[in-house]
Amino acid sequence: MSKIIAITSGKGGTGKSSICSELGFALAKQGHRTLIIELDFGLRCLDIMLGVKDDIKYDLGSVLNGECDIYKATTQVKLASNLSIVCAPEDPFAKIDAETISNICNEMRKYYEYIIVDTSAGTNESVFDVVEQSDLILINTTPDPICVRDARLMSDEFYKRGNKKQRLIINKVDPDIFKADIIVDLDNIIDTIGVQLIGVIPSDNEVVISTGKGIPLPSTSLAFRAFDAISKRIKGEDIPLSFKVLLQ
Image 1: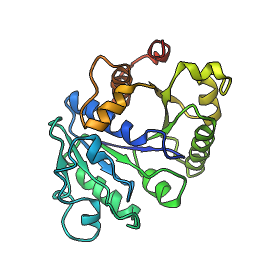
Image 2: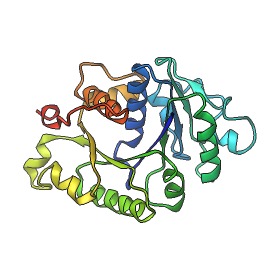
Image 3: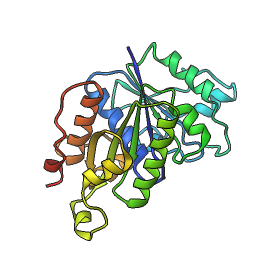
Image 4: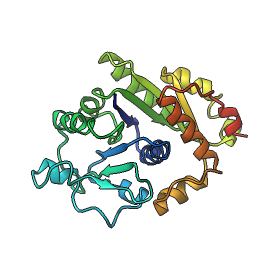
């Protein structure tokens, strides 16, 4: 059975798209046919992060406008044979139709084991309508108290809608933040949001280099280890949450 994974956040700037790209690379490297569907209309960036910005002929906007079908709008990632992308339209005013997105995902289930949906940030109605149809929701936050609060509000809304298939990713974690007395520890973030943790991603300059150049993370980086572990937990593997090691 294929799995639709929505990656979302209550606030922009939490690294949601970089999580989508690096999880896509990780799952593809493990031999899984993976598709990323980008829904951040008008703020397209995954074409750069995946190294295909010069290869995009059609995008999701082309599909919604009836210019082509979803297959023509799907672009193969050159550096990962099992990874493909459907880019968001460049038009910031394009409309997200939850039913259409659901139909697209269900159609692509025939060909991909994992479909990663990169939502727009924020707690607007269209995001909830799209995301709640997923098999797994990954709520992304940084340790910043504002991001944590927004993630809690988003999670609460999903719970109100009866969706309990949520897991938490804490991104851009730097050990020095705990010395500034802004937050107590990671357990405090988890308790505040109220969602089971699936992974912690340390602050790592290799992520900036990787996404900027459109290449996979080097296997020697701390962030690679984090993404590799998260991808395996998504698959159901019993991988310990060793974030203390990642942050040393």
